[in-house]
Length: 177
Image 1 (cartoon, rainbow, N blue to C red):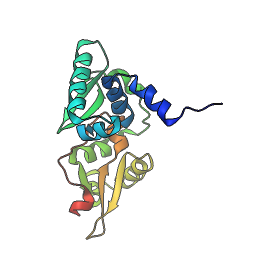
Image 2 (image 1 turned 30 degrees about the horizontal axis):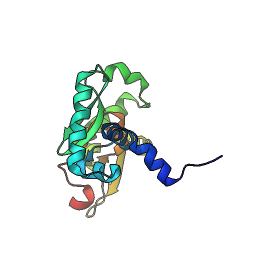
Image 3 (image 1 turned 90 degrees about the horizontal axis):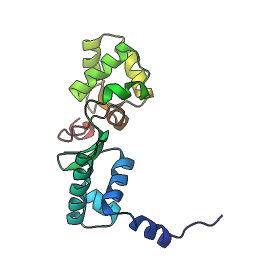
Image 4 (image 1 turned 135 degrees about the vertical axis):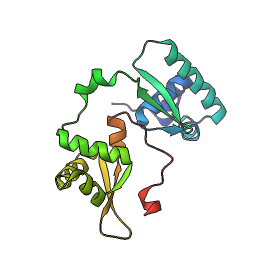
């Protein structure tokens, strides 16, 4: 079986329009991406990326589609349009109890919370919820630099699964703790 050379692969990729290549980047990244990141991945200038992104966004706005490109703090992502979440809810790969979902919602509302505070809010059953949420990769758990508790934060999988953009204005636990 013959494989394409890197030069042939580049030629095939560049046969697609820049908006189409940006759409592929946004789709495959599955997280918000800056103009600079897209420029590096597409091997183009940021000015060209910005123009192509505007064309792509206009194309989505003119079509009847379930997807849209959202911009938040200079980062762009391909998202499901608001209002369609209920329609596709049964397709999500989430098998969590109501109590565990409530614990996850508490973490999502706080963005970052100490495990000890969460247990105070949700009760001792939260330990089992945390264990399940970590096992399913919906949250991340990092030991406090001072103290005996853990910081709980939302994972990238949470943001992808629930189509919620991360709050880019908050510092990472490792930077604060």
